[in-house]
Amino acid sequence: MNEYDLAKGEGMLEKKHIDYVIDQYMEEFGLRYKPKITYIGYHRSHGVKFYDPTQRIAQLRNDTDLEGVKLNVRPGTVIDSEITNPNCFYFVSHETFMGTTKPAKYTIVCDEIGFKADNLLAIVYQLCRLMPQTKRSFRRPAPIGLAAKLLERCVTIKPDLFEKMEREQPFKIHHDIVNRPFYI
Image 1 (cartoon, helix red, strand yellow):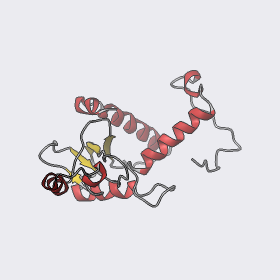
Image 2: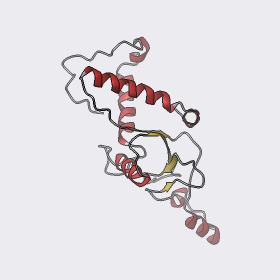
Image 3: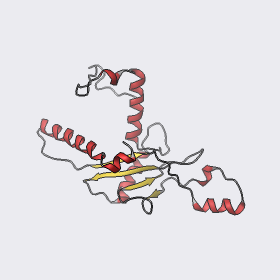
Image 4: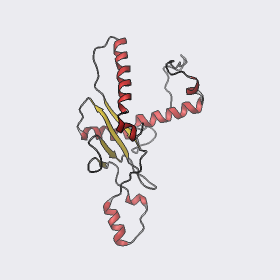
């Protein structure tokens, strides 16, 4: 899902599918509670970059050629006004050691919970710090990073996994590994 699809409202298709799956689960187990969910789109497929204006001014005054890293904005920088609509924000969650930092753009598709903006940013930032392989903040939230690694591992192990599988056919996992952790 890219920015154009989110703008067209395609994020709502995913929301409807997730709502359907949750409803089926609740019905199957006889549960009456309907959880509230916030749907957020994440993408980095854009050409937007931000620079620290104080560093840029210093570079122009001194006529020096600073490396791109020194011009980067600091981790934790949020851009949520002026160039974005009310349901979008850019967020730099990590420090770049080489080159220019590329912020992630988050689009709030639906907020049933009613988060305050600062609370939502705090959650996103904490999710970027949960990657088990590093102590540093990661460029994307852990659930997205781990899902990408798992998909890569699955395709490496079984390249034709998704080609032969029918859309409605459930994926069968061998009973010996169902309850064992899968390290990625």
